[in-house]
Every structure is written in structure tokens, then in C-alpha cells.
Length: 206
Image 1 (spheres, helix red, strand yellow):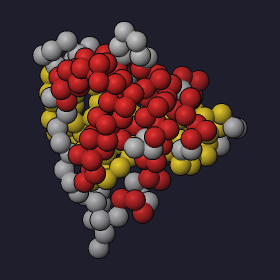
Image 2: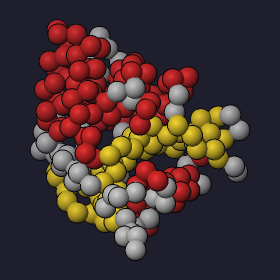
Image 3: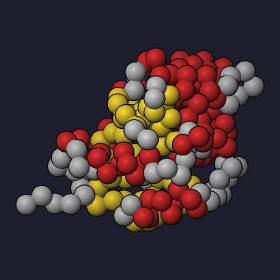
Image 4: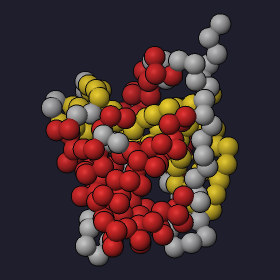
């Protein structure tokens, strides 16, 4: 199996949006589904914008014989605040003033589960492999190259968050060398147990 990893493009929007949804369907639907709007439509809208935490400009995809089967977002943690703000702005544009209030309310609840990442790192998010290719080490393959690439130069950490009840993903990240540094349990209506923050210490170049 020969996988090509490349930057996402606008043409990838429908498939990447579906993979992003699969990365955490219960939480995604809770956060972005309303009586009149679909989660998938918002994710595709946000991806096409190129802005915020779902934008194509911060997304890498994996392709196997022309079929898109992997996606991962990554960005400098120093940009975290701006990307969150951009996502809020996109939400307002998508849902409108009348429809934004339940999204804001649930967003504030979910936001309490996430720590602000350290500013000297790279954040990995919205990681998903298509069901047809799971268990074949795609993330590990992508990660091995990414962790040695130019985007991590001068950074101290690679950072990600994983649902506390996602034991398979947690075990994978542990095998790759990520260490759990904090946990925040869900106490509201969000349909997850909580969020576990994990760090991977980048080697210091001498």
C-alpha cells in the first residue's frame, strides 16, 4: 500500500468533512447540529473557507490510489486563539443570529473541557482514517514524517486531545510516545466522558 500525503484542497471538501465528522461524531453532532442545520454541512462550509480549526489551509490528507482515506489538521499553537475566533465567526455566518445561540451555549460547555495549549507547540486535530484503511498504521506513517519535518522546527511539543473513553486512540498515541498531562471530565450534557490532553516532546537539536 502506497499512501500519498498532501495538503488538502477545496475539491477534497465533501470527503474531508465526512472524515472530520467521523473523528468524533457524538461530540460533533452535539456541537453543531441544530433543528435546521446539519453538522456535515457546517464542517464542509468551514473547511472551504480556509479559516478556523476546520479550514483546508491547516489540513493534510492521505490518498490511496486516488481515494482520500485520511485527514489531520495541524497548526502552531500560538495561533490557537485566532483560529477559535475565526471558527466562531464562521459559525455566525453559517447559522445566523437566530440560529447561533444553541451552538454558542454548547460551545461554551465543550470549551471548558479543553486546555489552552502551550504557545511553543504544534496542535494536531480532527484526525481520522477511513474505516476501510483503519488498523494499517496510516497515522503512525504520517506522524513519523511530520515529526521530523520543517513545520516543527523551533517547537517544543506536539499536542493533541483525545476523548477519555476512546481507549484505542489513547493506546495508539501512547505507543507513539505521547504522554497524558491532564484530564478534564465532562459534567454537562456533552456526550463524552471527558478530554485527555497529551504531549509529545520534540527532540532538541544540538
